Image (cartoon, rainbow, N blue to C red):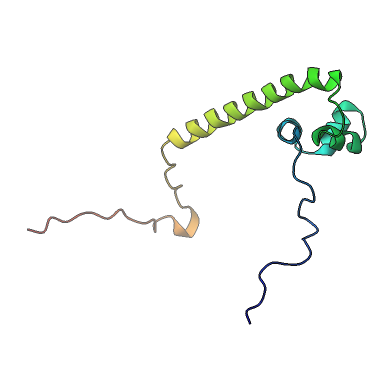
Length: 115
């Protein structure tokens, strides 16, 4: 008989409920319930209820979220541009050796013409 690969009990780190209807919005805008709760000055449980659709989304949240999401999108585009610029740069040459190793740098291989 082969051993079972699935566990009877779930991991304590596994999410108990699937994400709610507003889960992605809050995850992108804040990253965590605690950050959203600090921003809106409400409890984490209130944010959880909003994320999972257990409570109606209040006006103060609906007014603030589009600007927060837009700021994250702009930040992501800036990071993408910086990464593209870094990848376009040529690699840095090796730094010169100093001290007792000064004359022992690697020589570049020369291709000999065998003919």
